[in-house]
Structures are given as structure tokens and as C-alpha cells.
Image 1 (spheres, rainbow, N blue to C red):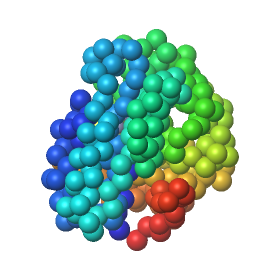
Image 2: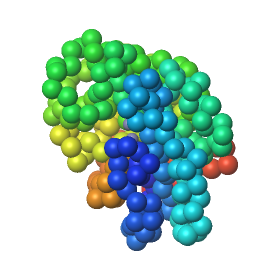
Image 3: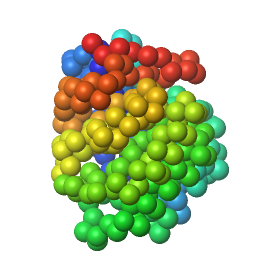
Image 4: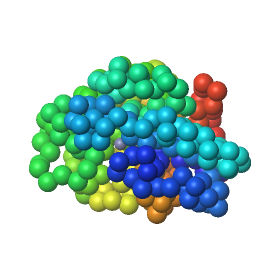
Length: 260
Ligand SMILES: [Zn+2]
Ligand SMILES: [Zn+2]
């Protein structure tokens, strides 16, 4: 039984996955559930660059693929960037037909600097703090289901000491544990410079110690080759951190699924 709750398709401007090809690969690799979570970014610059994302078209395409692959559970989620800042615009779109769930993630600092792509400018300790502070603001807002890729700025760095941010990170954990928001374990960075999951194992240990159990796994695949790569390795890492199960969102609540 495998579950991947973070996948981008052609409906994301930076991805190229074909839904049918994805569904076929999911079935042949033993997935029980996958979630399509294309980008929904509503910052002025995002809209200027990419326009309003084709939400209902995206949803309709998933409906079609659901009919074609009835034995695969295909969730329709969204990845809402900087959701707490742009939720009024985003919700206008999401209210047309609510998605199954919302992953909210921080990609940018308040000054617009994107930390989810490779960057050359040095990241100062203050920048790292500002990044986690934005995540704290996001989870305080809290009207979503999954906190996406915490610590994403490390994806293209081989190491970065952000231990000065631990108090902020603990506040983030406390907030999501209290609110029933899941922590995504994003394994896109296993295939990138960092070569580890995000957030990294010491933080996962801390989350577990604080009572956090609600986790989802997300490959954050943008190409079909990324999908399923490193899945088993991720499960191993997550188990080593103490977790015995992951969660799926079903009928308005979290359902536990033991690792097998
Ligand atoms: Zn993202
Ligand atoms: Zn993503």
C-alpha cells in the first residue's frame, strides 16, 4: 500500500506529468491513493506571469481519469502558495467546487524571493528566520489540511544550519498538532542536493516527541520519472523517526494507514 499526496501535472506551469500515464504508473507500482495537487498561486506577480490557474479544467480532467481508473483512489487537492496572504482570491476559485484538501506552502519570503528553486544569493540567518516566521503565520491562519514542504529552502543546499530557528519550528509544530493539520514529509529533496527528506529527520524526531503523529508523504513530482522514486527509502527514514503510520483524508477526517 503506497500513498502519495503531492503530485503536479501539466496543469502546473512548471510540471509535465500526464494524468493517464501517472495513473497507470501508480497502479503498476502498487499505489492505493494519489493526490493531484497542482499549484494555485495568487500573488500579483504569479497571476501576471502565469494567469489564474485553470482550476475547473484541472478538476474536470481528474474526474475523467477517476472514471477510467476506478480502482485507484485519486484525490483532487491543491497546493496553495502563501495561502494565508492570498486566501480571499484563492477561495473565490476553490469555492466554485471545493477541492478534497488544501496543501498550504511557503515558497517565497515577503520580499518575493523564491526559496523553492535553486538560488545563488546567500541565505542569511535572518532570511531563514523570516521563512519560518511566514510558516508560523500560515499555520496560525490554519484553514487548510496539510503544511507543505517545511524547510524547502534546504532542497538545493548540501547543508545549512538553521538551529537558531528551532523555537519557531516548535511553535509551528505546536500549532499544527493543536489544529489537526498534517505535516507533509516531502521527499523531492532526496533526489536533489540535500539528499534527505524535508523536514529533515531531527525535526521529524522533534515533531514526534511533541506528540505529532499526523503525517502525509509527498513526492512533489513534476515529471513522471520523479514519481515513485525514493518512496521506499522515505518510508524507511520515517519509520526510523518513530512513525508507524501515515494518514489519508477521507470524508472530512484523517484516517490512519499503517505502513506495510
Ligand atoms: Zn511547493
Ligand atoms: Zn509542489
